[in-house]
Length: 408
Image 1 (cartoon, rainbow, N blue to C red):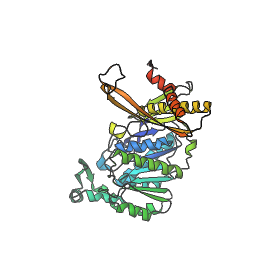
Image 2: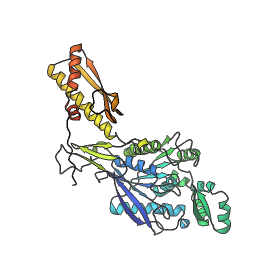
Image 3: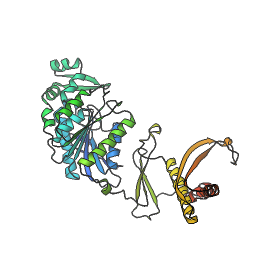
Image 4: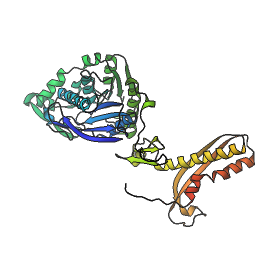
């Protein structure tokens, strides 16, 4: 995934900080806008998972900080639900002027409510996905506690939200009270996807029910069982991203077979493998024109969107082993129907092995199990095991390897 940082004038005229996440080839098939939750920012970890999933499907995603939040300028106290909607409309104008009009809106929590309202003024938008969204903007008043009385009496007050202080004015309360969402939901012509956790303790599941019952078809609901409101579990966030990506391609009319593969090896011979890492551990790979993704698992700080480098090493050895056995059996015209190779890799103590020169420290241990299907006799099976030891990648791993590294 590539990205560009940018700014554009928000709904109140202040510069709004944004980031445009792009497919690795930089040529999107569609554009989306992501709107974050109340008092959050565009840099919430969960947003990265959603961006990764969409860009993998060829959809560029613009995420921005609402006025007065994150890296955006302006005073949060001057913002309202309506000004948040205006920020989204400003983001859409920016995309349309620079690239193309957005066709998908993705909103989290209050950002989902904002996305629904904004969609009514964006004719190019074909689909809206909301995550843990309130059925009405006024829902936020439930979290103000006694500060609401102070705001009503004194015109403003400092409110603790998610452990941080925010200043709210009476205009904000008046705006959310007047901003009923029912007409917007009923009048939606866009496809609507509602994702909500039954265990969401911040925005109850009844909000999802109300939205779903009010909306017209086409509409869909996905239960995020066990997830919390902010999708702090990486696995939950990755799942949400994958669901939105798969769902949206249907309603945006995107043919995944036609999505252009990344092409950053056009000046290199086909045998060159090129990898690119720009953000986190997720790495885009091009080998002989075929795109892959490498990553690390969640527990190692990755986003688990692809195999790890060592898993790719096992892929190389396993596929080479299988092909070599297949080629030898075909040449001998032996009745081999299929060959399956299962491999594991671990770091183990060198002292556990008698056939290594240095018994100090750790060594790489790869186990390789062959499953040979066919009417083969014992001698044929034994011979194919010997052939497995001769596969080119196996020989490379046991031979002398010289790696030259230079700067481009």
